[in-house]
Each structure stands twice: as structure tokens, then as C-alpha cells.
Amino acid sequence: MDDFIAARAQMAMSLGFHIIFSCIGMVMPFLMAFAHWKYLKTKNEVYKGLTKAWSKGVAILFATGAVSGTMLSFELGLLWPQFMKHAGPIFGMPFSLEGTAFFIEAIAIGFFLYGWDKFNKWFHWFCGFLVGLSGLASGILVVAANAWMNSPAGFDYINGQYVNIDPIKAMFNEAWFPQALHMTVAAFCATGFAVAGVHAFLIMRKRNVEFHTKAFRIAAGFALIGAFGAPLSGDIAAKSVAERQPIKLAAMEAHFKTEKGASFVIGGIPDEKKGEIKYALKIPKLLSFLVSNDFNAEVKGLNDFSRDEWPPVAVVHYSFQIMIFFGVIMICIGSLYVYSLFFKKEWLSKNWLLKTFLIATPFGYIALEAGWTVTEVGRQPWIIYGIMRTVDAVTPMPGIQYSFYFFTAIFVSLSLILIFLLKRQIQMVPKLYDPTDIQFNAKNTKS
Image (cartoon, rainbow, N blue to C red; front, side, top):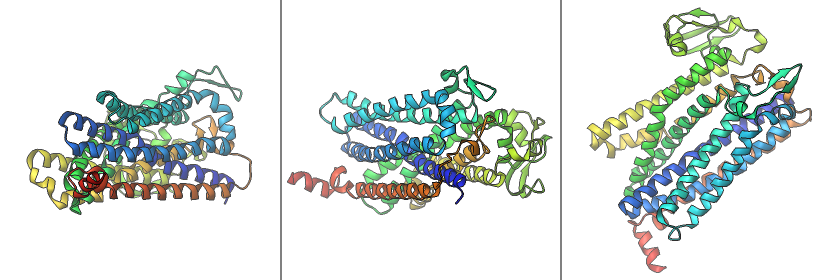
């Protein structure tokens, strides 16, 4: 394997795994805190058990995310030394602040796990909520660093030198808010659907039904926030891309020719050699409206840019279509659930509705991975957009493919361990967490 391809593959693989760990770690504490709040308000012991069960899951995911995040930070320096040499002093601030947020999260989760019946009940609840806030802050700060790569700011590039560095301006670059907002909303959507799907499956197995029903409804509520918020945040992100990276937008839509009143493309197979897309459904003038609120606005095509600046059009286009496809499905499922809540409450206990959420369990993370593919591959061939090419940033060290194989084995092992631990947590619900279960009462009677 070519060292450059191996370095990119290793980074892509690491990010692909870490983004799942980190997004669950960002959102699960909020589900935990909400269940805890319900317990404090209602005194229902089922919510207390649910809070404790989810808190153990949060702890497991925190440890996994810490390992994968640490590996990623090392990879930045090992695989892309030229990038870090120049970019480190510019966008180092969000990484430093992310470290602070990480330490706060670690302290808060320790307080929460071991603070039952030791702290004031609302201080204890706040510790759990703080786990979510600090985890969310960590995610946003890392996204700010990534956004800087898409929208470099906070320095002047003169004669190959990076001068007049302003780390505040670099952190709050033009892309950070659209990317951070869309990423946060997507994390809530993906995690909400994943957790709801797991509990829907357990409800259908007729085990600890009350426990899993309460868990399902909390998770589904968070999934709705993400599903309905995604189109709005996505629209903000798309308008930002159209303004800052028109070539990425053109690749997303496989839009080759500059034109006014550009059509929005659904599906299709792009042909880069001929500069056209085949078998696509086109909605007239919609792309122009989406990027500028004007049906007749001009949208630049790929042909307006040098070929050596094109990203891999097919990869970006297909990834964008996958993201939209699964996003629309989740909106439809969310709409069906809302309709059930208000007009057809009897549907809420039907197996077909639960099966719908079960099938949708991975949809959010498929869309999330596809969206990140659009973000990262759509920036190519640049590692710092318009400033430094990816090929110029890679390490000269040979044998990167072996590093790729080794890190892949570690991430696969981490994933298997995570699945094993979470499965064991679910199996322990009757004995440790559900106060309505006979096994729980028998265990507590013995103790």
C-alpha cells in the first residue's frame, strides 16, 4: 500500500470509529441526566435504576472515547508532521480547551458514579448534567479545529510563512458554528435512534417492559430533537459550504456546469470524464434556492475549477446522497412517532412501531459517517483548504501500512470490547437496575 494512501486510510478509519464513540459519549449523559431528573421529580424507582444503568454505559463509553481520542491526537503528529508544524500554533487553542473540558468531564463522572446518597440530590444531578455539558464542549471544540481546516483564519500566509497569528480568530472561524451545530444535532439524532432501537428490541422480547419502555420514550424524544433539527442545521451548513467551498458543493451535487436556476440532484451516477450525471432525478431551480434563497441564483460548477483541485466527485456525491436518504427516513419515523403520541396512542405499544425503531438503530450513524465523509473527502486535495495540500503534509516515514493494520486491529478490538461490556450491562438489568423485577428484589433481599 502506498504510504500516502495508508496514512489517509488510517486517519479515516480512526475518525470513523472515534466519531461513533464520541457522539454517544456526548449525548448519553443528557439521557442519563433526564432520567435522573424524572426520578427526583416523581420518586419512581424505575427511573433511578435507569439512571444507574445508563451511567455505567456512559462510564464505559467515556473510557473508550478517551483511548480512541488519545490515539487520534498521536496520529496527527505522527502521520501529518508538516501540517502540525504550521497549523499547531494557530489552532492549538481549541485542543487545549478540549483537554480542560475532558478533565472536567472525568471529575464530574466520578462524582456522579460514586455520589449516590453522599451529595445533595440536586448537586449530584448537576454533576451528571455537567458530564453532558463538558462532553458536548469537547466535541464542539474538536469540530472547531476541523472547521479551521475547511475555513482557515487567524493568520496571514506570506511567502510560505504563517504570520500574524490570532488563535481566537482561528478558533471562531466562519465554518465553526455551522459545522458544530450540524454535528451536535446529528449526534443527538444518531444516539437517540440507536438507544431507542436497542430498548425497542428489548420491549419486544417482553423482558422488563416498564423499564425499557421508559428508556425507549426518553431516547425517542432526544431522537426527535435531532431528526427535526437536522434539516435546519443542514441548511445552515450547506449555505456556509456554498459560500466558502463552492467546489465541495459542486461535488456534493455532481454539478458540473455553472448555471442559473440550478437543479437539485437526487441520486444519479456522476461521470467525471464526460462532466455529467446520469439517471438522476432533478428538481428544477431548487439547488439555487437552497444555497442563496433565490431560485434564479447562479451556482458554480466543477468545470469552473482546475481538475487538480477536484475532490473525488463520486465519493462525495454518493456520501451526500446517503446522508440525505437516511436523514429523510429518520424524519419520517419521527413524524410517525409524533402522530402516535398525539392522535394514536395505541400505536405506541404496537410491535410494528417498535420494529420501525429497531430497523432504524444504525441509520443515524450511517448518516453521520456519510456526512463526515462529505466534509473530509470534499476538502481534498487540501488539508488546509487553499493553503496546504494533503500530499505535502504527510510523513516521509516509510511503512505506514503496518501502522494502519496495527491501529485497525486496536479499534476493532475496542469495538468488540465495548459491545461485550454494553451487552453485559443490558443482561444485568433484571438483577441490578429494575426494581420491579423478581431477580432484583431477590438479590437485594439476600444482601
